[in-house]
Amino acid sequence: MTAAPRIDAVFDLDALLTDDERDWQQLARAFAQERILPVIEADFEAAHFRRELVPELGAAGFLGMHLSGYGCAGAGAVAYGLVCLELEAADSGWRTFVSVQGSLAMSAIHTYGSEEQKQRWLPGMAAGDLIGCFALTEPQGGSDPAAMTTVARRDGDGWVLDGAKRWIGLASLADVAVVWARVEDASGPDGSNAYGAGARAVRGFLVPTSTPGFTATPIDGKLSMRASVQCDIELAGVRVGDDALLPGASGLSGPFGCLNEARYGIVWGAMGAARSCLEAALERSVAREVFGRPIGANQLTQAKLADMFLEVEKGVLLALHLGRLKERGALTAAQISVGKLNSVREALEIAHQSRSILAGDGITNAWPVMRHAANLESVRTYEGTDEIHQLVIGRELTGLSAF
Image 1 (cartoon, rainbow, N blue to C red):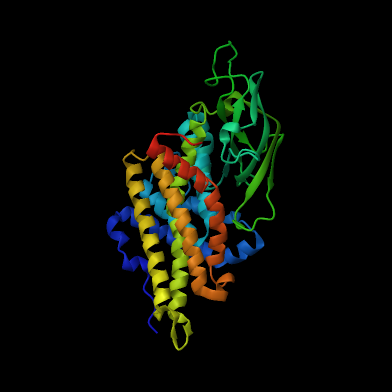
Image 2 (cartoon, rainbow, N blue to C red):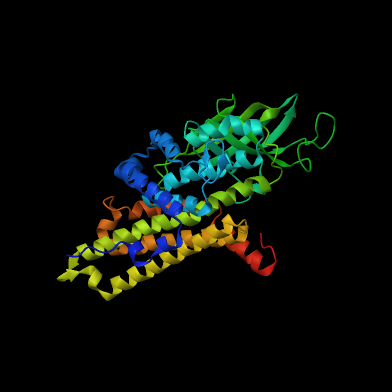
């Protein structure tokens, strides 16, 4: 029986990429196939995060690869997106790691940090020797970070942080946490408004996780993202110096800028999960015979495959368009919302359709589809739910806020 062609041979995406972008994609695909895929089903079953792969990701140049200097690769936006796609084709947890480390924690330090902060943290994080986390979401906050209750109180020549965060990726493994808190007293030592606009301005703090009062507890019972780590954080009288404050970030525009970096990676990454599901369905459709012929010879099956293929290719082309906009400095938050909403929603539908082609065997770990479907439920929720992105797009279209 003739094997099904690879779907990327049907639609020639390579012709739209530079040699450097193709090299990054092939490097990430090889890493995913050689280092993640052989162990991911066992890791997902055991809820095990393979910490030893982090320095290998650093050595490959994937950590903070879109940033420049401090040991970072300085790669383009499309190259970074292609790496996200290939890693998530293996498992969403590993693209999530790269996003949390590079697009959230490292981007916050690179964009808003002092030179001393950058020198202290970024080279080790780029190498994978240090891990960072991004502590924004709160137990009662979810999609409403403006309701943040974590506070930073001025105390002598430093700060004391109190509060709680939830669903913080990597927190129990991290060396440094980027903690976002409301400043209770924004006046400086001389009485000036030195620490933010308004008495409750949101500011970012770099908190070494060894600091007394910082506790990160992995969340148990997850049925999604099981090969990744998400945590509850408790901040109980966490004392840091003035040098912990990120000088360049004041207000919610700081964390939102980082979130947009992560959302951009999801636009690409979700299409990797979708491609993996489609490839599984395609392989099964030509190999399994029912009623004397391959199920892929049936019109209904071919219609499903064709529809899934269309959505993968449309999603990747949208991601590529957004990447080119990002490289020109023209990408907007609303455009990122279009990409994130489309990619994750379509990837989940592709996972469900692929499972139907795989039939009963599709619920086993002999195929990656149920694992991708479970992971994508988390990807759908974090960095903005479908509803949040619909409202962002609706505001852009109408000029009216429905938040």
